[in-house]
Structure formats: C-alpha cells, structure tokens
Amino acid sequence: MEPIYADYSVSMTEFKKNPASVLRDAGTRPVAVLNHNRPAFYMVKPEVFESLVEELADRDLLEVARRRLARKDTAIEVDVDQI
Image (cartoon, rainbow, N blue to C red; front, side, top):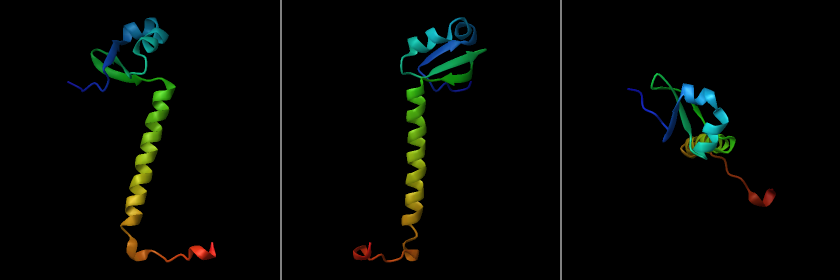
C-alpha cells in the first residue's frame, strides 16, 4: 500500500465531477486524488505551492552555507574599512 501524503483525499471520479469544489472544500490542505485507491496526483492552492517552493529553496541555501562554512581553511580575510 502506498502512503498518502494528505489528510484530504478524493477519488478521480469525484474530482472529475467538480475540481473547483474539491479544492474549495479542502481549503489550504493538500488533496490526494486517488485512482484505484492509489495517489494519482496531489493538488494544492497556489499559496501552498509557493510556500513549499520557498521552503525548498531555503533548505538548498542552508546546505550551501553549511558547505561553505565547513571550508574555513580556504577563507580569505576582508578589510571592512576598505569597503
């Protein structure tokens, strides 16, 4: 059995009848659209998707910063008075 990463789910048949209604009923929660009781896709409002993308970008930046901090031996000194 595949995990479903949403608290709200609907069948593909129900989704096809009125996708806007499904999204409205879900509010800000992600919706798992099921085909034969398996997730076919997930649907989220644009605001939720934007938040997810921002979170992933933040995590990527954090990883870059951690890698750079680990390379202290290659750091250069900067004279802030010269800037």
